[in-house]
Length: 275
Length: 251
Image (cartoon, rainbow over all chains, first blue to last red; front, side):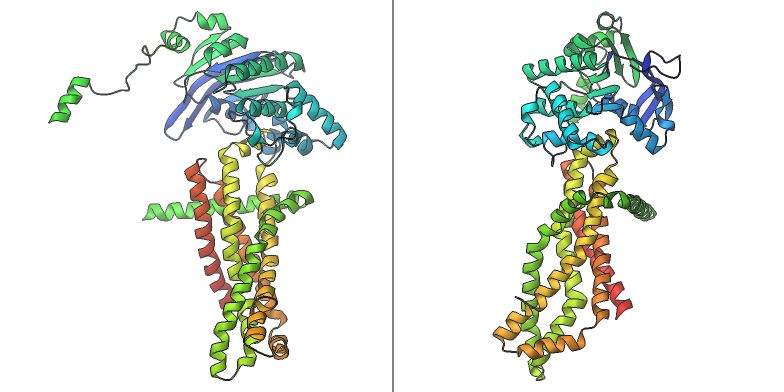
């Protein structure tokens, strides 16, 4: 692991301060602070529609926050020029929910894509590197398949091999476990953990699969309504005093988040219709 | 009303800005000959069949129509001239461009729109690869290069080979010598140059509209469908309007 130039952030790879972001009239983040420590797996959890993916796009510099800062390895992401930002992104890997594999390329070429774009390595060395990455995710044998021939779990594993092909410092996972059967879920969970430890990565997982994510992460943040509602190690989050966090973790149908969408009282509504 | 006009101007501004970004990215597309070859193949070579067939049919129809009229004035031997001038100056560039918009333009818009909808473009950005350089500019350039070549093939098919020549000379009995001699006498380098200018202008307009529509499509299936339709509609109107303007200045 490299050490950061600024001593303050020595153990923190990504730090988010006072982040505000709105999408049209909708406020998605309203003052969020996060610290992502190096070498650890950090989970960001929250209900659907809280803009968890937005957070990854903000860290990756694809979108700009309306206020607040995001620093990666001590450098403010949003004060970078386009080319500096691209330099920075070579040190980040991102796994999109659907894999985002290039559909006109084979599995092999997809994993080779970042290497071919950014390095001048000879083809024989690219072949070795790609096969190593594919072997790490267990898909060396699938190298000649096209993305449409892969199952959802396999696509994500290929996308993971591609995300680590440039040996990044940070890997961001967008809902890696959603819609997976138990076996491929288990495979993905083990991959996230072992790759993080073996390659000395820092990982951010954005997800609402509470049980799975809490079982592999080192620390977690629970976000809802644009604010951080709970954070800490897995057992600390599980023991949270917040009623909202408890409802979210246990998946209870009613609680601080009511079962009914905001409406006028039921009886009044029915009588009103009769008029 | 002002709102609509404002939206319209905003759209044009965005599209112009997009064009400048593409032009700035063209040098980096030019240094990737393999990527360019692939794009010229999918935009140009795959449009060949429709261009060759349409060229032949347009030539055949023109031969039938012109011959009847020319015959009235006893000028049936000028058939070659009539076909050649109308095809080189108008039908070649315009019909090729309209077919190109339907065949290649819609495909370009749908492809880029789907790449956007499936996060492939975002994915590239996160891999520090500029999608304008890697995806948009090569496709734009391929359209620009393919259009004049396709128009040339269309023209050759319509005047000679299976088009006007087949009907005029083989079926209607016009003398082959006077068919070609007339063309050689009347058709000048200027006409060819003007046709080239026309088709390269149409090529730029079609490709620009297609990549813009695809790149700015809403990332849903309805959005991609809309982008594809808009590409064909706007391109066709743009081609006909530009043709009027260019013709007014040229002839």
